[in-house]
Length: 82
Image 1 (tube, helix red, strand yellow):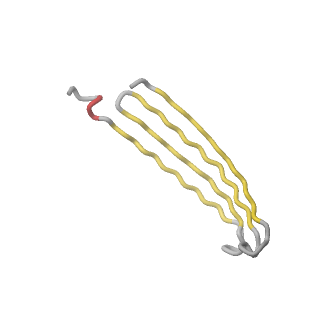
Image 2: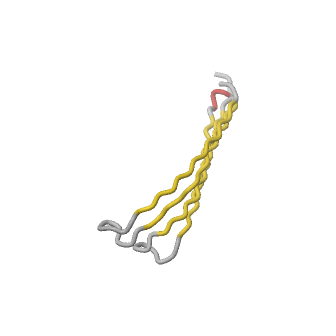
Image 3: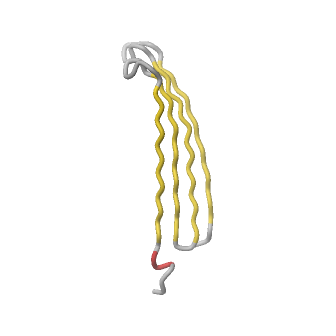
């Protein structure tokens, strides 16, 4: 396995108008980033996302959320002789 690295990012924004299913409307916006890095016998994957939303039916003020994860995969047979 050769070394490689990949970085991707994304963002979105959405809104809902007042109506039957959303009595008071709402908005949501987020941004995220993913990172993949690999070298002989190891893969590291990381993810982070920030989200900001306003939905008066759920909370009277705007809310923010962060989430992140890191995964490390190690293939032992790549480091130790078979």
